[in-house]
Image 1 (cartoon, protein in one colour):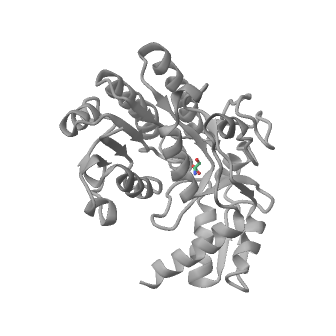
Image 2 (spheres, rainbow, N blue to C red):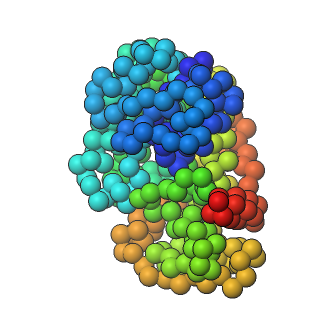
Length: 318
Ligand code: SER
């Protein structure tokens, strides 16, 4: 991994993964790819950036060729709620775009491709507590269907073309640098903005809705560690469960109240997001990732809330 292309570099994960990779592999060696609006801030200022439209066959090939890319992180995608709002665009980006990336990577003989999967790859029929790595999936959201497509295509490309495709099933990610957009788990980020700005937040999921969640430094760590793991230890490809914490809205509110006394959470349930959340696991069993490549998260709920509160308060005060 000497020259890395990251699609979706402007997003919630990309904006944190690109600086982390630049710190590791050198600023010039990590190319940040954007699709609709040019990058700004840290990601734009610290290294190369280029426009890549994954829905257009040829666009990824060009970036690989122009920048001498040997490895790729494909983060560009429409999150769960955004995908339901535009089925054909979600098909173009989340399914055709993924296939274009894999074809381009395989055609150019790339060393490695990392594609994050998600808790969305599971469905209503999946055991919800401590969901095992290997289980019935059958997702009911378009985003989840595309994630299963990615997991299966990762296996397919590995077996049929030798392309080394890897990935983890990420929980909902909590972060402060760039806000997520169009996801079901976004409430856990929005609650901090509400708490710091107004001391209150109206949650669109019901109390008692448990979901696996992860603080962004752990998500970035998982993406880098799976990419760098010794292949001799890996028995799977793009579908490793990674877990760190699990909470429901009332528990998050109580944890935030330690930093914002009097913080009030009330509820106005959004049926679509509730339906999607109810189909996802409550918590993940990540034994396989722990055994095969040494996965261990650093943050639990209390540490995450402290760090989130401090960083977001500083950002919003600027
Ligand atoms: N955070 C994503 C979403 O809510 C799940 O992977 O769509």
